[in-house]
Image 1 (cartoon, helix red, strand yellow):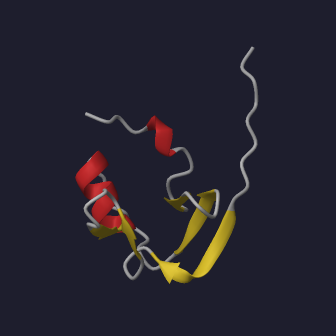
Image 2 (tube, helix red, strand yellow):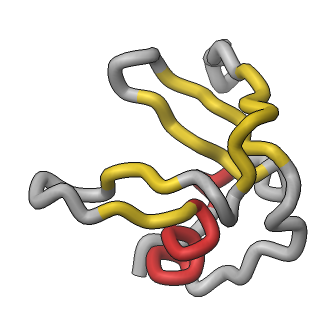
Image 3 (cartoon, one colour):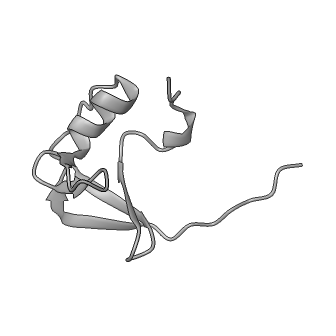
Length: 77
């Protein structure tokens, strides 16, 4: 049986996938969620005007598109 993990998720209504940029490396490179999912997973988001879901902590936030409920299911190839 798998253990359940609960994560706090909030909706960031003032950030959309197209407008919000976040740091992706130690060099200070910033990308939108749309760019990140395209480059990392070769997945084009369909609803780029929807707000981001924010998971993780305030010091290390994780921004998730609402249309992709399980980002860990994407392959990292």
